[in-house]
Image 1 (tube, rainbow, N blue to C red):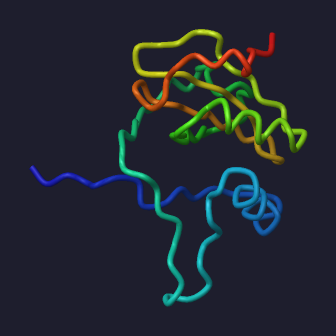
Image 2 (image 1 turned 180 degrees about the vertical axis):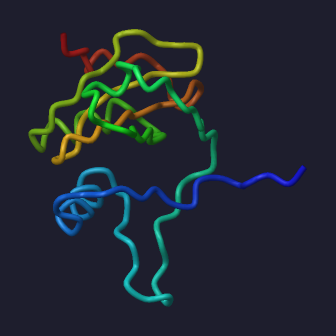
Length: 134
């Protein structure tokens, strides 16, 4: 069976697409879409990508009006959380370490849910500097 190789893009509506693209580039390192075919696009690191439809009644995304949530793999959750918090961005770190890694949540400026995931084995020493927000 032929299979897709990974996610080639994530497309969604935004009130201010230019400002939101700049926020993702500035705070999460997701390069903005190139304006010409000569410019390189954002390249993600290799690794697992989960594709999971959820029940329409799920509370997992937070606000029930949100139709999607993106999960970004990160190398070092503690450093990413520190970086975001230093910019005044509220990040909630899950206190539990799961068999597949550690997680944190935040929202972009338009309220879209974002999950950060440090996969198990990727410098997964529990870092006490990233205290869960409860």
